[in-house]
Length: 302
Image (cartoon, rainbow, N blue to C red; front, side, top):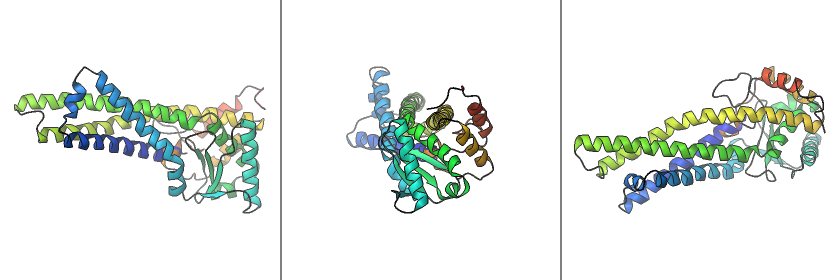
């Protein structure tokens, strides 16, 4: 349960930075961004929103692996460090081969029981497990967890999450500017002041930022819903790669008795925890996931 905090935080920061930079540049050039976007109907605003919305998502996606390695204090391993590390790397290699992808980087990070996958490309990903999950799960259970993470990578979930976030960013920016423009125009008419004045210009962009935060929170509900759907797919993918859902079921049951590690939001969508479901949960409840695995078609396997 690790991928959604960092991803969302970096995404929001990137979008905010891009729009602020655009505002400053336009201000220096004497361009009224609100007026320019309003010219020609909604098309210019939609194009602007799409470019900046997708840019924020792409930036957060490309930086995801680097940021995660630093923030989670990940230690990349190659299997020469010891017997446990050798088993971990060889298991990831085997599962990656079965999934027909290039073996991801493998890392261990300090913390409570959890695991995650991240990266912009399926053939250049990172799979990391915590020190606690290695110590508290059996190897068969851990193999189920690794199969889950490899399935996230093979399914391209990092990219599809990025695209989903980019599309949502587009609408967040679009409606934030649209509503801010309406409010800005109304205030200018009521006060009789020039809507292009320095004060009005500053208020307009402050209003945009506030709307972006509010709409961003609503958009995160959609992102979390999509994340929960991908969790079921990754669980089923683990069963297919291993040939049986038993290891993943055992891992989820074990996880229910452990205190899962808290992952950054940008990673939560690609972790494994989630005892309870809610609108803002990146994972379905453990019970729902176990039931889904137990009801998989009997021909699930490799």
